[in-house]
Image (cartoon, rainbow, N blue to C red; front, side, top):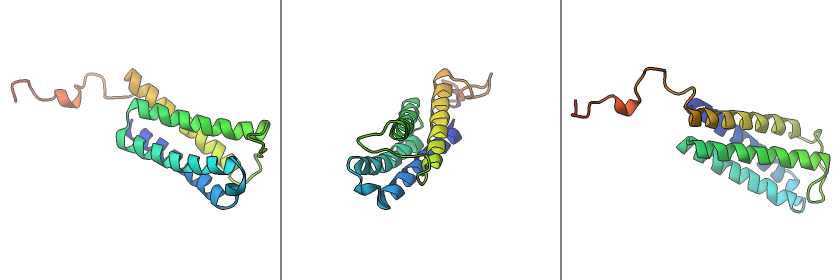
Length: 138
């Protein structure tokens, strides 16, 4: 689970960097959308750091939901417009962002689900790491 959580965190940082780059190169001048790109970039980094530091299911789910919201925002903007702004999948980094964030949803959501269900954790028959010592100190 640890490696998958770090991969998910890296994907969120990738998405954040895309949004910060777009904000810096012109999106900052778009009313409402500009500030949202800045918020997405900063929040994406914060969520990624939380995932890397904690790697708990609730944080993984939060990261998956964050990426889902970002995908949803892009798709809304492309298909119907958002806050008076219509985007396009031919815009710079739009498809890359969509792919990165969709993979983040799958990786983080899947990792959280595996962590909660206990699937993919320690090998069957192996005691948990803290149970290796006897209760009598030996």
